[in-house]
Image (cartoon, rainbow, N blue to C red):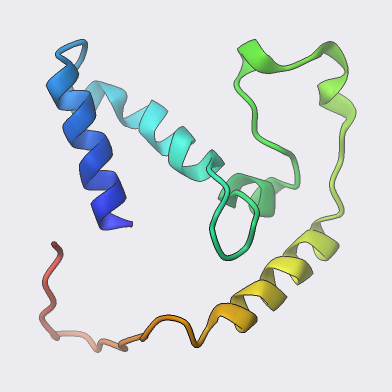
Length: 101
């Protein structure tokens, strides 16, 4: 996640169109709307139960599409448990030091 955020901020800053501070809202929306590799859903979809789309891409009838949140979150939870052994998870306690590369 940190490397993705670092890359996005570098791209925004090097484009010279606007500063990274002015682009944070768009960056946050894009990260929260991106389909997660493990859950196969976006964070916004899991949170609010709707497929996130920019207003410019929405069709007139998109407003009525509802998603069963319990089913969606259940599928995501199963996928997370299935994927749990693929990466080493390190637990940290308060006061531990870690590198944020």
